[in-house]
Image (cartoon, rainbow, N blue to C red; front, side, top):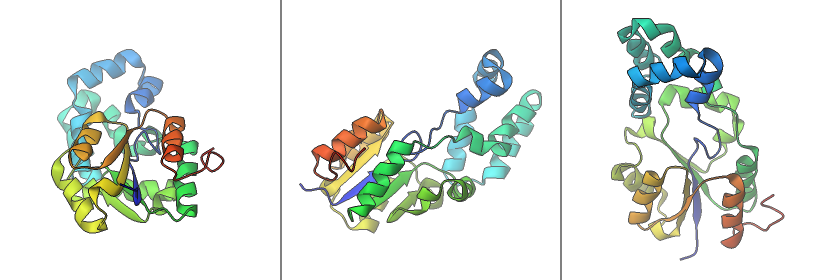
Length: 206
């Protein structure tokens, strides 16, 4: 079926999301490994993605681990340094699709407050035709309800959606629902897929 809309994940598709890399730089790899072994920071972040308050959640988590309090608070206080940099080629692809009048959606696991903050740093996050943010929706990938909510809201048949995500679990759920999918490994592979689908020319996908 012809593609009617393109759906972008954000983390590691449009913006790099590598918290471990940030902590390696700030506190050193050994100390970072020790902290991540003791503290479920990704579990903490999952709560934010589910709609729990960004500041309250992280600061409460920090208070549970006094020996790591300062480092855990960095997840909040220096958050934009964890979510950096943007991926310029992917941003160009987003804008090239919009220039072609191809509807472009975002489907992302992201908290409410930190997503609002990110839009002030990365203007392209305001450029989607439809925006599906897990924290606002109180549903997260890879669970089925968030995909159902996207389908109901956008009115596009699942088989006419092309979804790019870096996580195979998220791709698998979409595929099971009949979406067309692309496992994002790098922006060039995504560009090639968009060209192969006839959505962009090679020149537009540079």
